[in-house]
Length: 296
Image 1 (cartoon, rainbow, N blue to C red):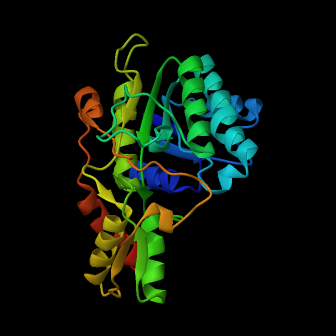
Image 2: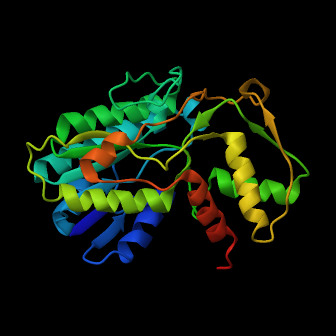
Image 3: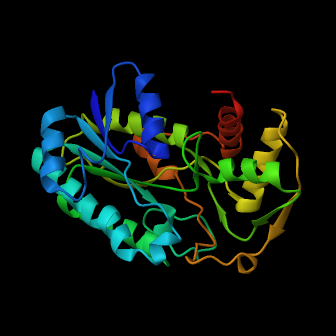
């Protein structure tokens, strides 16, 4: 099976490259700018034609949540217009498209985990741009899976776990928001699940009822403060510095972008459709921190 990943350097693209290399029967290649630019329909179409993939996974995105508030055009150019270019190219080529989206398409006001059928209502530019991209995928790529995930951490790039380890080495206390809850997701686990889904959708007919939107995150939920505590505890088992985590309110840590108070995603549907059962987030954090603290 040949998988074409749009994206080179992000957490998920690098995780997909690692998992793809370790998965028998999978030929996975990552592409990105400048050779493949989502703003350039010709380059996207030419890339798909050159690689002739069975499945395309879009791991490219504008993910700077706070900067997006001041860079609306840039966020929509990548997360919406660029995704539309990719969806049209995949649709025209008859190629299956797996598009990765976000919990930020919800407003966070629901008191329970979100189902795929719940109403979307993004409260920031980033979430709005990702939702616009989802709609273009659904419109132009009939053979699509949209995978909404949340709170991604990994050994690659910038992410929450890496930031907590850095701050623990510099400070005597970490002040972390405790009134936002969600499902931390290890990019390696997410990548493995996406490759498994790709293997199944490659053989699905266009009329298969499994095309559509899914939630895909590690099992269980916590707060940002809880994730920080788990990160520091895991770090301590590898000789890292232990510092206390002081829970604070969102109002004590103002940011340009509003964030959903509830980002919990119910992942029952992806299990029923594709047999995907994600590991608990606590186990994921242990493996993530171990990878971050391992010598290169």
